[in-house]
Image (cartoon, rainbow, N blue to C red):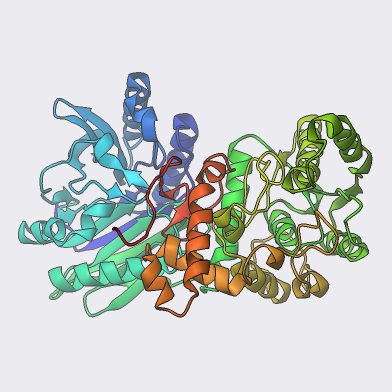
Length: 556
């Protein structure tokens, strides 16, 4: 039976990798919602039942078999409904394992389609696991030929072009597209290009939620030919989007759809960090977090993010002073904790550090004071915080930013201790900018208080590790605006030293920073995960060898 009207439901949900039972429950709820909405079609996001991306779980035969069984269970649930389910999942065939879409109606699979273009860059290496499918043909849904390109398929014009040539009248595109800066606008330009080329509307569904170091921001949308945005879902939140489509003389158009404003580029990094932190903690079975609150900008921002994620009652901040901790830091840390409303304790590390130095005296004898003594302070703080984490069952958060991690300005087994680092992919100047932003904004789904939650004194003062008298970060590092610019060139843009020097930076300084970046790789390899906010995050997105003999110098 051919129809000229379609009600299409997009379930923008937050699956968990590997949680087949939990993801099945989410899908069943979405199916019930689609039935209640009298939808003709329900679309789920890419690899929904397994979660995106399951990595080497795909090498486990039992996992593959269980995932296929769960898919069959969900498909059976469509029996007795009028909803056609478009289910992205894994599917094993004689040709191999596929990133697939199963189209199901009345309890039966009516079509299967396989992802053609398998990404093999950045954070996803699907060619390691999947067999690419052939160029797909449209699927008949309620008598309408529907194209179903899967995520990466729309980044290559050939798949959508083939679908259009084979008679597709409308495109449904399931995705697992992670966030990074301006990614929402990149996706929109991509879909606009495909819609313009093929003269067909496209509905783009993205998942939402944190998965290890990735954050998926949702923001699903649809576009019609003529550069018309016809609906747009929420950013960084689950959503259930129902739209009505009508076939006319010029093809399918959206008769009903709501456009929700995207988050701003100022707001998005904060929401990404909060969502990534919240999901990492909750999905790994924790309910509360603990962190060291030093009176500095990084720990203050992490504390504010944690309160926005979990509420003040579930955030525990501890000040760990030593003789070099300034009165200003003590005052600022307490002020920040009071503004956020968190539990705040002071645990002095004076006696433990001094005792360790005394016991090490015979080994250190005859050698001048240096970083070894300073780092004992940081490592003692790490010991205390991990003890609290173990005893109270709270996840320890670490607070080093990307600038510090880039040059190794962090103490391994000390301030790097922790289960998650919300600032891992955020340069120092971005931390300052977000602190100012949060003091004048509170996103609606955040649980923290309104107003200036981060004391201005913390924002204004020179950053310092306070491991020796009158220490500031600038004793060892160039000013952070300069450091961030050099690191952006080296890490984000993969520029040569000569290219960075040509931008106005001192050559000796650039060479020094490059060396620090290279020798700190072993630290970063052992660092806590954190949300990926840029195309070149340490860990996910940038994979350099620890033992690395390459130096960017003129070859002689």
